Length: 490
Image (cartoon, rainbow, N blue to C red; front, side):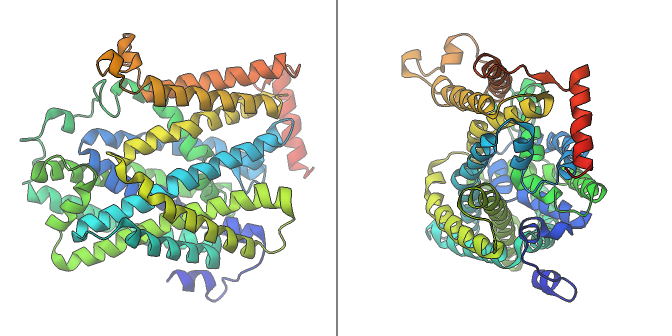
């Protein structure tokens, strides 16, 4: 079906970078929504969130609605006005100097190679292993899924990825909702009796994965980064014919995010606790094997594998776009054959992704690990967007200084201060200092604010530039002049 949609009558295929990375700007709202949904929803969510076996994790999905609205109303118009293929192009236009584009693109690529791609393959392979009860190495499952994902990326570009995402997403959501119903039926639609209260409460305690107060601190900024400035997501919103079609796709994705996703990523996990006890990331696979009829298990396994393939191909395509536009074209040579470059880059990324899968096998919770690791990149990168969009006359090197500060300060928090210390009887530094409520989600706000501040201080003290706030009188004049220049095609 994907092949017919992409290569059938009237589909065409040209050799431009826009065709490879933005589907020729021809994605309708349905495929924008489908691709955004499946780029996010894969086995990390189904396996990882259900692996926590508590309803609380639904906040990750519910709060995503805010991030999608900000993407639709603020960032989509900006990306289209600036004719962006990658989010890093916008930063290059906003700063004095292009080095910020290269640095942030490298950070996105590092995140995709070291975190997103192998985590998706690991969680998908773990689900299939749990479902079938086999002892095969996870690489046995991961390798073929990655190769198929690369084939989609190489032969069809973003158009094929978006079509596959949409068709896979419809099937996955339908069967996932069926699993929720059958799981509830297996416990007589009672997920509360015999289950500890903290697993069914939506008010997170201080020591929970999402303390309630963090919904009003770092959570909102995590969602802004992920949905509005993350190349893996925004690339799909940039591939529509115009702003309104892109916004319609984002609105549809937001509706799915609120109405469907929360139920399928938390309810099965709580039911699994009631049936099997605390089984962590194996919960979803065990539950599906228990409640689905035998003849449907194979179909669901195929649909989950398709979701992993769709998710992986989407991230591969985004990664190839970043490499091609921000590195190959800039430092090696103009891209005369984007399909060839995409093929070579996809093969390299496929190999590295497969090799990284075993690294995640020791994680007690894949979703909590991912959220913590994401902080290394998310807040420093978001600080560059904030400084670049809200201020003018900021040197790119100053923004890079803010990035370095953000990376270092978050790393110190996450890998030193937030780790239990034997000298403090197993307490973290924050607990020892009387700050047990300070969560890594809270620290993300501190990292973000201080990173922006460091950028502006370096800009003034080191480079002698006075940054102008865009909502000041001078800033408004500068912004209007920039918009006029863009509209004039300069």
